Length: 179
Length: 378
Image 1 (cartoon, each protein chain N blue to C red):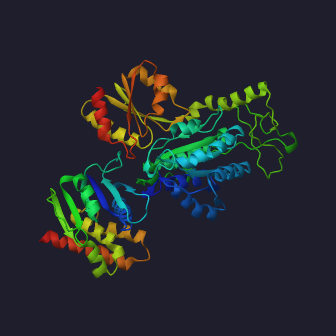
Image 2 (cartoon, each protein chain N blue to C red):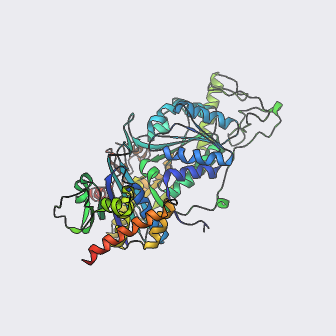
């Protein structure tokens, strides 16, 4: 098993943190994982990309070549990275931000991630955690408890908020899968 | 087997943790992307264990403070990126001639000048060797994983202490910023080498009188020994002596203490080289792309292997010479337009064809590119 994730959006959305949490969750679940990132010199506002590879074996080349899963949380990131998604891969779009739909050959999940974070979790800042919940529900790459543990480890002071955010993402994805 | 649990750790953090494990107790630096996390971790950790962290006014002051701290007997380090290494160059020469152990980390980014702060490069390979003026020896190490960064940082301190030489740890942005699953070695299993302390009473101490291994014993300032340290050529007393005979003796001794101990300094990994007809020669993050390509090529029945130097200075000439007699072609992937390839060519002579694979756009060379190159030269 080797799965490549590309989490993309804008600096400040917490995508590098989300990548770190996903990789930690995979390690909690006994798998191998590697996380890399690229970003502009500006900390916020510029394009941001975090990549995670989860594998049962060795990971030599640390970067994503063809993503199995693409999370797009900005219009710019969506346009830039949609071609780097494997045919038949998984595309998770934040439909709060991206309206466009341009026939990518993928299983497309449109989830209003930012809106759910703002309105249901109560804080836009946890949009990255909502997204992680959705990724875990859709891909099944890490068990929910391993992911929860990794989130709590990263944010020990905001357990309730993050648990809620994770659940919201999970449920939103499950709901789409049932449809 | 280590008792430690697997964790996710960043390369820069592994460097800082390795320094602490090696016994580093002084860090002076000026933060710069992509090396800043090293300073960040050490600024938190050093004060907890009686160490000192100083953010200096610039890179020149940082290396100067590191040299000063080391002279008091304290294992010392600074960390920077290319622009900072340029500024530190002069004092690296000072540490070299005054034989002051210290570790200089350079997390390479695209240059020259401020270049591309967040993009990887291997543009500082020759600067690590020849950045400071004068005919000096140097050790430079280039790990390719988070775990190895931890281990090689310890090794950098050990070599620096053992041979009283500045050691440059050449990371690149990929290795520095990457987070990877690691199981750190047990602290008891780690070999630590400390510098030889002065064994004679202060009145008999000659600070630059070498032992049989070419390395002088090193007293610490503050221990009651009075001695002079200078960047001028000096004799055993430590005072300037620019006479030709003494100068020749000193410069040769500085080189010899490294050249006579290559077996302790040079670390090279080889993969699938036994029956290889083509060899890749790669270091740092491109060596990971290379290994990935080698595994794929082997699946297709292509006889290709990988030579991966961890020690790039002194250059592992013997390994390359040996390989050149066996293989037909050597491909050298580098994130520069050809730096270490010159050394490979120098030692291969006409035994094998040497081919570069170069990328300077701030992106890591991919396994696909390496694979294409292998097939192109087949």
